[in-house]
Length: 280
Length: 280
Image (cartoon, rainbow over all chains, first blue to last red; front, side):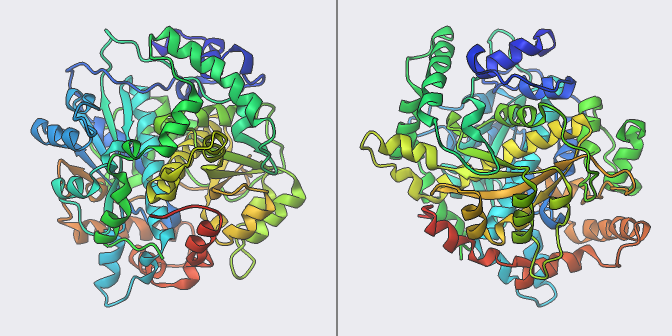
């Protein structure tokens, strides 16, 4: 699908005609990156041979802090287990994220200090660095870099993906379900499968570049004007897709104020401490 | 350079001949991802026109939790400022990461709750969700996904990159240097520039896939045997590059036990709390 979309169409889909960056370097890889959209309807076609190995090779090719490789990935493909993963990420009304069951796989990206911890303790040493927030962050960020490379690889094959942050809603139960060792947790899920062509999945517009790109020093000037401009693009996008009218500001405020939005993630700190992470 | 390397050479460079995954799907994008290597020597050639806009468009095309877009990037290109950034990330001996000064730019990837916070408080609402660990994590992970897409885009143009986690060593001073608002911090830096062809930069081997890839449930079985196999690949890599002989196990243990390795990052929690992040 993306092959037939032009450079101008891709840039306009991402920013709206008014806010398109003027100078863009272009090649096939960049076109692929800009074509990204989250896929929420999957066919029952299985993953191609070698798919998981390929996605993991791409993931392992991402940078990893000090080559410590403190992440793992659990590929859940067993239908019964996948249904249980979905139930834990289905939200408080039990209805959300049905595509976890529909797609052939969900990859659970794990921040994983367990290997480093075991390798260190095996020689009678004390891995005190793991007691600090920075170690938790380092493993989480490295898992994210790996996941994103897998996403790019999957899309290059023509597969669709969608990230699932709701895998943190019931982090304790999910870790138990997939037998995670202490000092590891699921940062996020990534559903992978073939898009169901009966459903469109659209490129979502983002904030104008000057909101996120700062030169030499951070400058929040003109935020209001840029958000105003974004609301117009955001509104046109939702209207075209027949979505309920909602401003981006309302979405931001709702996510910042509502414990419904957290949906269990308010317990993440307690769960992670119980799993052996430190936050010094 | 990567164009002339075959599929087999890339896979062998990443895993060693003994541990190469047997089935791999292949295309130009996947070859690009597997070609990644960190570049630590740069020429003085400036970035091409439109480079930053292109990298940021790729970054903004990555997924972002609930479309909240809670990240920013500060592109430091001013030589004097770049020298100050380098000084803050130069390690306790002041010698490390000199390529920050050599390359034309370092992109500082910022986890940024400041916009959501301001937009929420502007209407008299209380952004209590931001007081939780999950909000800190969400913004940090989204910044990482964005950074990785920028990395893939940069490499597709032929640019080299290297991530700098040492930007967290003096997180407080760095945030002040680039005028970061409260509730934002630099997750990591990404140096971007043209590789200096006088220096080789090599594909670093990673752990065998069965260590990081688990099917349906986590299985740490055979870790010792796989690490043993990896040590052979790791040793051959270091020997070929004339690096000091060191086992991977030694590197892991040193990073887990040494406060020298943390190099200031042990203060990250305190710095972030002072900057308004919550860890409930």
